Length: 364
Length: 161
Ligand SMILES: Cc1cc2nc3c(=O)[nH]c(=O)nc-3n(C[C@H](O)[C@H](O)[C@H](O)COP(=O)(O)OP(=O)(O)OC[C@H]3O[C@@H](n4cnc5c(N)ncnc54)[C@H](O)[C@@H]3O)c2cc1C
Ligand code: SF4
Ligand code: SF4
Image (cartoon, rainbow over all chains, first blue to last red; front, side, top):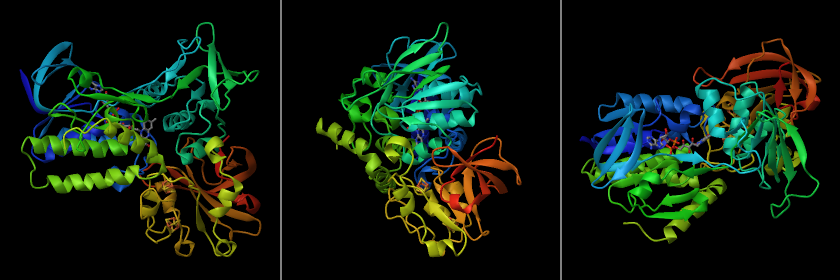
């Protein structure tokens, strides 16, 4: 059977940093990614990132992906398997991969799960009409394959993803007649909202989409205003002609394999739903299974990278690597994470992590 | 308002404006960043001390306008595209305005374009005086526009027709 000392599943910012930090300590890493390329969400991000220098602030997401991908592919301690989807967990530390149409079992000493998240969707009449996409699909079409999703796109959701994808649609020459948000306030960083607003895109808060219409594909949507208790206000329906509706209403962590492996899971809405319980250094309730990035709670690439570093360092440490530098490197990473989460925009994450902690301690 | 529409209030805009005296002394930065977010590249980009040191990455940018010479380097570093430079000394009734630009086409020097306010409405036809790249790694362009002085604090984007 194939043997991996440290098996990292998923090559977004969390998985890449986990692989690099573990391999730098001397551990042997196998990094598996179901896509034919590495980088996760980063490859689709054409905008400059926030954060600080340590997290590559003001570089564009796909550039960060290029840097980390090159570092992982050149690292002698990292074996990369692309186009390899992890399918399931089996007893005695075995995960099966699907690679080139074949099933490949891999056994590991430690596993770092960095599978990221999947998009939430929304139910309303005709929500399955062609032309209704998740924001991730629109971004993949546009920024990975160079295909325009349509001519006139309404965005549902004014969080960072909805607003940034709207900006990218404008950059691709697509008209965006509305960003629609059910909450009374914009969830995105306000600077992002201001930059689409000054290009003439209206943002409608306290409104939502109640139905979609079209014969073969989307032709129009019906919007409605919402009151303080999120109920439709009578007689406020209005039509908007669009050929695409892009849905950006949040993400849910991809935890299936962790469920299978018996990791204790808690339901924490602030973190995006069901998330694994973890120690302060990202180990789950099952020894030698670690988590990092959006799978541990929906946050940002900046935090995902730091969590990846922590998980990678700890997995390596527990296998006997990098004993001298461990404490110091973890302390530095924790400082970075605390700084990222400290401000008002980190409040949701802080609350979520506190609530998760209240479900009990995992190890140290 | 900002949190509902994406448009800052006049009071917010006023609060981050350099003093009238500083504005008469030449080009100076204006940073329209009103929400504490984990972000600080504007501060690390300026080598002149135009930004006061961030104690915490979530701090709002705070300025030392006396140290700023309006070079515009910080414009291309800001992922929020929230940094501008205004030079009110350019001419009697015209000011220079530097903005970040991330769309195609990139206008050429001498082109006339539409100057848009913070809501995307057209305020005036404006001339593009200068186009420069914020660096090969970056791909943001920095445009210098000649704008009516009365709109120097209102025009914040353009449309190339
Ligand atoms: C539009 C948009 C804009 C964003 N802007 C910013 C920003 O400005 N700043 C910022 O910090 N963050 C930003 N983010 C958030 C950031 O992209 C994510 O938080 C980050 O990518 C999470 O990293 P991750 O490694 O946990 O997951 P991901 O990047 O999602 O990577 C997970 C990887 O795991 C792979 N995978 C999943 N399941 C399997 C399996 N079973 N087998 C093998 N591989 C698998 C996936 O294919 C994927 O490559 C943005 C996100 C979006 C969508
Ligand atoms: S314009 Fe130049 S001097 Fe002024 S704050 Fe920006 S980088 Fe510093
Ligand atoms: S770089 Fe831009 S968005 Fe970030 S803190 Fe500075 S002004 Fe605000």
